[in-house]
Every structure is written in structure tokens, then in C-alpha cells.
Length: 637
Ligand code: WTA
Image 1 (cartoon, rainbow, N blue to C red):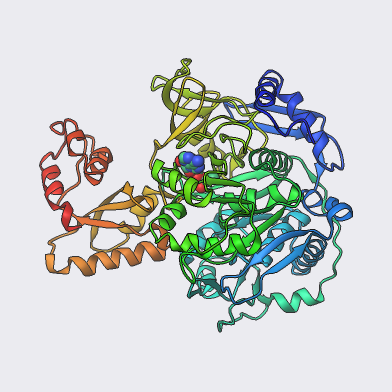
Image 2 (image 1 turned 120 degrees about the vertical axis):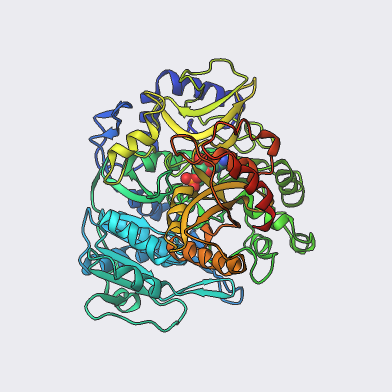
């Protein structure tokens, strides 16, 4: 066992200390031990967080897929790498061994090459959660193409924006995707998106649902036809440590999503390190992360982390509610899942159902539980502990972000203590700190402030694709020389962190980051809308929900309110995706503004949260009268 995988609390303390005192040696030793390199690095780390420039393992050469696949073939080639559980419980599940994975990824890689893909190209992936999605992601990495996975619930507009931003030359999609009883017409949506993109030269289409679609000659190709012809060996492209591995978009405070860039070596090192440490994976364990590969959690902890560790990782195509609310527990029993990693919003939704959905299944295979994506409330934590873990499984509350690439703050299964609603301690190698509003680091242990990370770690995002200035402004300007997370946190006297939530204009709805500005922009497209302001407010299942305040152009006929609201909802859905739809829309005569004309979202947030005693002084507003009107009108929304 590697000495970097923590086994006891005292070892955690020692390793943490070592990682802070000599971070470069720490990461260099771990990286040396744990991977196959074509060439070792000349310098472990060089950085300047004011610019910021960050380089890890400079001079090293590698291919991440050799570490996720090839090196396992001799030892565990026959072991299952991926268990695929289809949406429809009557369809057979698949057990894909490491050997199968090698063959399929190589064939996919050759197929991409045959269609013209090469190192450095950006390839957009818009696919359902099928094994072919995993093959495509890994195939891109194998040939050195940069993957940009777009979640298959996003609209045509969101897809085309992301394709354009990264100037992708190829799109891999499917005829459709199964989600519970529904089929998402992915190819049809992609066709709409491509009306606005000139950069895509080739579209590869997987047949999954049998949905009828149109294929454009010379642009669109069927997966099964191309796959059949592809050779099953493909030599991995040798990549430099800092070559881009992928781009993944996440919402920003301004309208446009940010294409976060991750690079080959650092990302590989840290996802492997954090996966093995946090989950304490042991050979033979069945590990299931319920996220979608369209999000960072799927990238890091369905694919790269587990596969580089030689784990068996389960991929589920469907939704927790189909065919009924017992599906997750049915899958745990069916595949004897040992480690289960999900989101608080899923836990809350499942906790609100009858317990018979849980109790009909044998969950005794479970030994470790995890959560990610938003703060977990005490009630949900206790339900998870009692009814799923039967009070015998550690619960890992893992805090991290698309930008951090991997888990930063979390307990370590069975090694460090888990505390309800606390993410607890940073992993060795991670140096968080809390900042006050004056920009000073808070030294006292027991405190509250804005969460920053004060020293580089290998899987940190390197830039925003095509916009380094925005990268600098968003993450490295608020607190000089530190990475600012956008989250607030509390720390107890033993150094445990409790994340309190976003301190910027991002709202986390059912674990998805939504930029309020992006939703406002969509609403404002409606010809009758003059202006809008979007805030989040607490919601029992989703964690937060979207509340939109809207003012109109000209006279408003109240009898049209409900049709107008559905039009706005449709608009948001088609512009961004159904996940962004407001839960409440309130049409109002005015929005509270400062004298300089800035909308006071803080007041709107308090009204949406029903915390009227915390509105503060509204008399300095430009239009204080509108506050009363909004308060009175809020139950009609
Ligand atoms: C929030 C997901 C509290 C946080 C991996 C962060 C959490 C944002 C937790 C990143 C947690 C994630 N406790 N809050 N355990 N995990 N968050 O980029 O606000 O989709 O900034 O990455 O989710 O979301 P993202």
C-alpha cells in the first residue's frame, strides 16, 4: 500500500504536515510511485498566482489512458472496469472488463481518427450515459483530442454556444437518450444547434433509442458503421504534462458559461490520489457514483479517478425515479454495491418517499456513502445514515468544484471522523483558508469567512478556454495570490470546515450550478419583458430553487399572467435547458434599485426567502415603494 493513502488518523496528521512543509516533494513522490510515465518531470511545480500561471510536472510525458487502461491489462485485465446499468431495468446490464475497455476505446479512437480527428482538436460530446460515452471520452484522451462533454439535458442554444466557444470540429452524439419513460431527441437538438455552428465538420451518431432522425450527407456518420471498420489497436498519443485534457463548462456570474480547462498530468495525479484516499477503495469493491459524465463529478469520479485506480465503476443510464423510487436501492442490491456516492438533492427526493422503497432491498453490501454538490442538511444526512447506511457506513461529505478538478475537503472513509453537515478536513496537499471582508486571512481556528485555497494543487483549472483575463478576474483578483472559491465557510476549533454556500450570483439547484445572469438574459429575450432579476431561495428537495422577478414593457393585462409565465418558462427551457426553469415568476411594477441603477438582489433574495425582518434599510433606494408591492404580490407568483 502506498504511504500516500491514509490508513490512520495519525498518518493523516503526519502526511498533512509533510504536504504543507514540502509540497513539491510530496506530489513528486506520489506521482513517481503511482503512474506510468513516458518521461519524468524536470520541475514539479512552477506558479505565480497573481497572473495566474500554474504548471505541474513540467517536462513530463504521459497518456492518461495508459494509466486508466493499459497498465491494468496484465494484472486485472479480466476484472470488470465498468458495470453498465441501463435505464430500462429489463434490459441486460453489461460488465465491461479492462480488456474489453481497451478494445473499445482503441476502436473508438481509430474511428475518431478515421473521421479526421487529431491531437489538439476539440471534440464535443453530447451523449446519454452509455458505455459509448465513456469510450468516446477516453478515446479523445487517447489521441490527444480535447473533449468537451455537454450534459445531454442542455438545450440546442446551450450546446451551440459551447461548441462555438471551444471551436469544436467534431460532435459525437446519439439518436436519442433514455431518461425514465422519456426519450430526449439528442440528434434533433444537435441538428438545431449546428444550424448556428460552422466549426463542426463531422458528426458521429450512436444508435441508442431507435428514434427516427435525419442524417446529413458527408457530415453525419453512424457509430455502428464506423466502429465495425475500426482497428482495435491504437497507440496512445504522447502528451506533455500541461497539454489540455479537457474543457468543461460551468455557469458564471455573468451570462456566459466558463470553459474550465484541465490538463493531463496534474488532473490524473490528483483524481487518482483523491479517489483512493477519500473512498478507501479496495480491490474488488463495487463503486457507484450516480452523477452524469456531463458534470465534473462524472469526469473525475466515474471515469478518470476510479479507472486509474483499477476500480470497478458503475455507470447508470437512468433516473432515480424510474420505474419507481426504489431504483437506486434496487441497483445497489443487484450489483452488490459497496461504495455509493450521490447528491444531497437525490437523497432529499428519496427521503420524501415511502420507506418501503428502501426496505424492499438488501443494502448490506454498502460500506461507504458519499455526497457532493451542495451542502447537505442535517435531516437528509440523518436519513442517509439511518436508512441507507444503517448507521454503519461512514458518510463522506465531499466539497469540491469543477474548477478544483477533484475532492478538496472531505472526511476519509473510516479514517477521519465524519461530522454531520461538515465537509470536515482538507486532504493532505490542500491548503484552504478563510478570508475576511477586508481581504485578510482569518487566523483564528473558530471562524467564518470566504473560502480560498492558498497554495496550488495538481488538478486546479489552468484557465478559462479563450479568456484568461476572465479566469484571473473570477478566481484570482478578490484575494491576491489565492484561489477564491466563491463559497463561504465556517471553521470549528478543530479545523473542520462547514461550507455555507455560494457568496456570488450562482445558485445551486438540485446540485446544478446555475448563473442567475444567464437565466435573466434568457427571460429578457421575451418581447414583453422589460427587465428581470433572478435569485435563489431554499427549496425542500432541490436545495435551492429559482425565483424570477419580472417587469414588463407597457400595460400588463393580469388575465394573461399564466400564459406569459408559461412562455417565459418555455423560453428559459429552450435557451438553457429545463433545469434552469424558475420555480416562481412574479410580475411586478418595478425592481428595487440603488441610486446608481443597480438592482438590489439582496432585498429580492430576502423577500423570496420570506425573511422580511432582514430586508434592512430600504429608504435609500431609488424606488423604495416597489418593495411593498413585491411583498404583497409574492403569493401570486
Ligand atoms: C457546491 C461539483 C457544500 C459549492 C463537484 C461549490 C458543495 C459548487 C459541496 C461546485 C459540499 C459542492 N458541500 N457545497 N460537499 N460540494 N458544493 O462545479 O457551492 O458543479 O462551489 O462541482 O457546489 O459545483 P460544481
